[in-house]
Length: 129
Image (cartoon, rainbow, N blue to C red; front, side, top):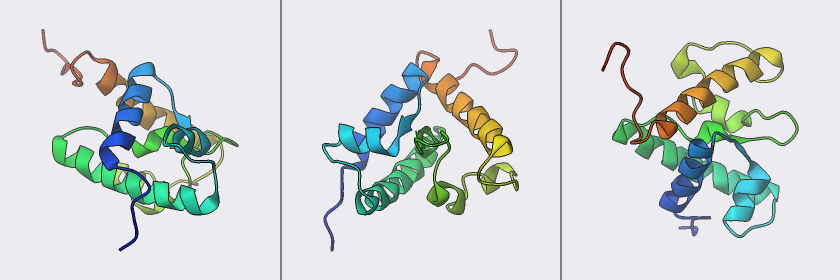
């Protein structure tokens, strides 16, 4: 079995820190934080780890974090995020690039930012005191 690029918990820690800071990371930035230079093979390995991170987040009742890893060119996650069902699970059937995709991604990222910036990782329910 091939060695993993990184421990999913390490990747999660970087992404939670980014979410708390209200910022997305490019694939290159994420790889750099893990001690690698950008390459397509490393990016593909990172995407596999991101899938693990999101499955673990779902099991914990947390919002997805992989949506915070984006292409430098347009600030939108790559094809793997879309194919894995990140958009479909939210009812989005639009394009994976362009202004509609960017608006959708900003909304999903905003939900993730709000969750992690809420102090204890939860967003107060509407009407809660």
